[in-house]
Length: 443
Image (tube, rainbow, N blue to C red):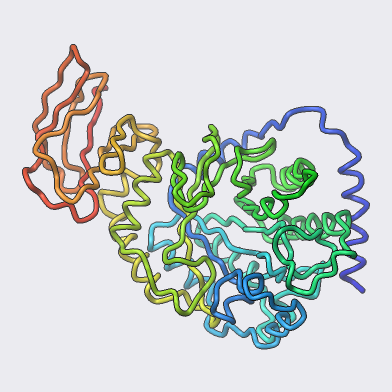
């Protein structure tokens, strides 16, 4: 009864919110603009896909892919007991990896809430574990200075009031009981809980708008009101939506799924690039949620080169880890992350954190970043072997050119007329991850 009452009480506030016409374009607050800059400077975050689906060890789309009845699926609640979960150990490990923030799936398409929500009994507190996962992660993040973003799905494969989209058609939902007003109120009530009960939330990461992209009549998600609700509760909170389109009014960042901005190899990121902070999300192996057979982890050099290419586009990398059903992060993922952290703690980190897209880009083998405040340009050579010389466009003669990783000066010639810089590089040197040249401008 208390869950129904909670939603009914919230209906009145949503009605008031909807009754207020949007008369002005979204104007982010000074705190929001500062948060956007902090977010861009971070450059590396960790995505954490964790929910009931981890118990089945078949990935986060298991219910949808196998057409499992929602009521049968929900019985997994009675077996969910991640005894090895330790939020502080997670955050310690992810900080050692060089990550500056996490994005955690508070509620995925399966509809299960990983916090102590009063809006539905389908949540972590009604499992044998009975502990508030979001609450413990929030406490650990705040204690250790790690940014906390929360993923929230617009889709629900279990609730009848969510209007049926192109997914969730074989899970036993009754399409005749669809009630958008009820579902919208439920979502906003949950978002209000997340933004009022857990301290500072750095961002809300929405997903699922694409579920109605095949509707004959465009579906009205009422996003502007939802975004206004979020910003009214926490003005600095960064709102993003994985709708695979150019950002809508009220959004504070733009994400690209499985592609660096400007590429569309996965077929999900053909949208125009905005001037908002950018983020690429990608898996460490093949799946987002834990899948026991998926041990096809990308190598550490591959992951670091992805981070470099993403930063060279002026974007963050949100690298995914799918925690196991026992609450531990997979050992292979931790090894990869540990190796990434070791590289980032060295001189290379200077060329990633607090940088913007650099002025040089020659395919995937030569890209660049630039210090946001220093103006130093970092050339990243990602081919297996260095060329003997390299010529790049450069407006002015630099003060110094050196190898960033070992600090050795490099000979160079500047052509004032053609505005080019020719570098002498170590002949035939093998490149394991990234050979970085630092070009320091004259003051």
